[in-house]
Every structure is written in structure tokens, then in C-alpha cells.
Image 1 (cartoon, helix red, strand yellow):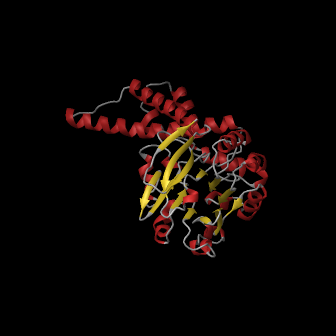
Image 2 (cartoon, rainbow, N blue to C red):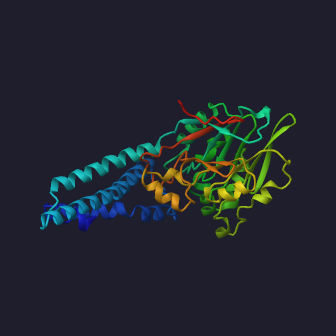
Image 3 (cartoon, rainbow, N blue to C red):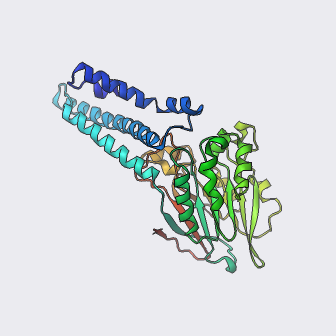
Length: 368
């Protein structure tokens, strides 16, 4: 950015030097994170500073894209005119202003308390007793200095008001150790649903002492399902709610996802709902007879357009509902987002309430 955007500007040398220092400082956001906490994943600065750093880093990233577009435009003009074409200072400043504006909007969208979005989903073989059953998904909370206790309390209040029969959290609860995040996760103890609150680990739990976090989350009243299942009952009718560990678990010396182990002892013939933080193994889950898989991890791709790149690392799954064999996969955009790149443009955060149906209607509605 210094070479392509800043250097050609007709500004005094002192002004250019000042801007260069600011650009370099903002570009090292993740280094400052590591220095603040020992981990690139947990910026331990006041929330206002984390918001500002995300905005500055996002503006640099967006300006880089805009500068590439300007350079390509200048190159095309030069080929047509058969001579060099200079990009005016005004155009460069306009690009910078647009990048700052978009970054500000993106950070505000990322940091908000998201709405509850409702979807109806078909479950093959759904017992009549479960017609209209309501399951609320939270995912990728990333509780941190960016998403502190006050934000968590607001999320919990909205989740509890959604009227779900059960609540599930599909991983990435935190960024930070138990000691760092104890107060921020405390509001999760007040999540309430008649059939319980269930969770699975995401990859970020393995970055910060996985055993300690699993014990702490269980102590808050969440029923964790690492390669395990629970049975949801309505009289003689049953649904199996299964969970698996994250695909990154073996890198931390922990058991990897094992759907066979998760389903061991499950009542035969009951529809299976699977919680798997990452969506990339959906085809294997469908082959095992899973009816609905709920995932997160991708944050919806964060920025429309960038989502196509994120999809490449997740077997093509990045945001929303997918038909995978006879199974429905839903990839949530995330309730929160990683505080190291908190930017959303066209991929909004959400909490999702699923209404289970035996029919074939799929709808979406925003609940305020």
C-alpha cells in the first residue's frame, strides 16, 4: 500500500512519512494481538481499541483491493491510449475514503447483537410429536474483548426470548483462556430452553486449553456433546441430537470427530440431528443417515465475494442451507466473529431458529 497508493501522492514528505507509519502500525494488528495476550487469536485491548484496530486493518485490506482495481483500470487505459496514464490524487483519496467507510460499516455489522432468523426445515421421518419443534442455533460467539459480557448478556436475552425447545451452540465459544474469559462467558449460564442447552467445541477451543474449557462450559450448565449424543423425547417419539469434536482436534492431541462413536447406543430409526463445527464433512454425515447437520466456522465468508474463497476450504459450503444427499446442511454465518478480522459486508451475523417440519416448505423470516 505504501508503494502503490501512498508513494505516488503529491504530498509533503513529512505527511507521507506519517501516513506510512500509521499504515505499517495498522497492518501489524495481529502482532499487537500476540504481544497483548500471547496469542494472535485474543486481542487483550479495551473494546474500543479492538474495534478501531479492526477498522484500520479492514480499511487497509479493502484499499488494497480498490488499488488493484485502479491499477488495472490505469493499465487498460494506457493500452488503449498507447501511453502512460496517471491516477489522480483525488481518485486515490476517494478510494481511501471508500475503504474507510466500508470498513466502518463492516465492523459495525460484525459487532452488533444479531437478530433471530427463522427457517423451516424438512426432517425425513419426523415423528408427528416433533412437528413444529423449535431448535435455536448459536455459533461462533468468539467471546472476547470484542464480544464481552455485556454483548453476551444481550445475545442470551434474545436467545431466551426466541421460544426455542432446545438451544445448541456449534463451537468457537471463546478467544482466550478460562482466566481471561471467565466473566465474558458467565452469561451463558442463563441460557434457558425446556429440553436443554447443548454445545460442541469449535477449533478455537483447542487453541486455549481444551480440557479446561470443556469442563468450564459444562459447569455453566451446557451439555457438551464431544462425539456423544442426547435423546430428545416426546412420549415414545425421539430425536437424536449428536455432536462431534472439531476436525482440528488431533492437532491438539485430542480425539478427532467420530460420528460412529457419537451415535453409539442411539435409538434406531430416530431422525438424527448433527452438530459439527466445520461443514466440510457433510457428505460423510449424509451417507450415515443424518437428517440435519448444523455447522458454523466459516462466518458466512464475512464479505460477499470473499465467501467464494472461503467455500473452497470447506468443500463448497459457506453460508445457508444446502441439500447434501438426503440431508439438509445449514452453515450459520455466526453469532459473533473472530476479533482478529471482524468485518461483515453482505454476510450478516445471525442466530437461527429452526422449525422442524415433515412437509417440504422452506421459509425465512427475521424476528426482531
